[in-house]
Image 1 (cartoon, rainbow, N blue to C red):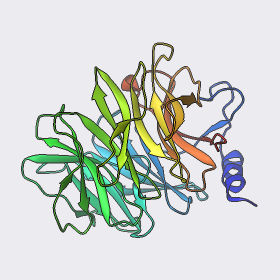
Image 2 (cartoon, rainbow, N blue to C red):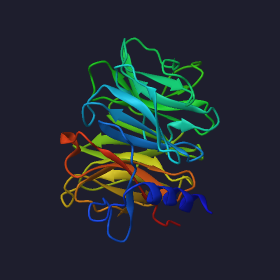
Image 3 (cartoon, rainbow, N blue to C red):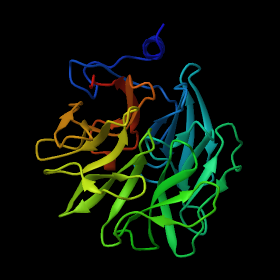
Image 4 (spheres, rainbow, N blue to C red):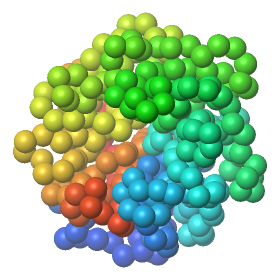
Length: 315
């Protein structure tokens, strides 16, 4: 049995398929993943073997800490609390789990301030390792290069959140912090492409978040999306030719999921929930997409949930 159908069959066997409340259009099926945890479940990301889902659980509502890193075993429906120390421990959707290093990268708000950490998925809580360490700069939203040798992340000076800059840094903590984006811009949420050549990120321009893309060395930076509404939470398809992201506009009440070729400026909407859909991650085999969802404004939600859907067919 192909992996795609095996995974979906497991969900169909063990959880309630949602029809009228499904946060996708009627010609597709989305299934809520039955993760038995209180709080707001966010930022789902696949393990390299697609057997486990990494996510962030905000204990007190959407983006309201403290926050824990959670592992969910798909077949066993088993929850493991990987990191929980009373601070905000947050992973990014997309390439947060690296196969080469068998490590997970995340940010944590523990003292003295937000920095980037690594942890093995089989490690006990408290065995994570800090890899960034700068006195006056905080670090958020990390993702791995495919070879596991680098991370890319957003950073800004403490207490100045409106001036995010994208940096990359070696995962062994050696070498220099390499700034990739202009200090005059507010840029965030970088995600590395599976082929290692590109980084997608978002930049705030004219009061709108737009998606940009650049080479992994910071060259050839150019805007990928255009038009009204914020575009956020971008990550790549496994062939590195497409991105999936969340966006709103005057026709969308909260946010929906879209895909777009990296060679085109036209996006394609893939959910029509009437609520909120965001923080998507394409599966490594390209067959499914994970995302977070809420029936209304997520800012007012205490129970954002995690869903899976078939990925659209792309060339």
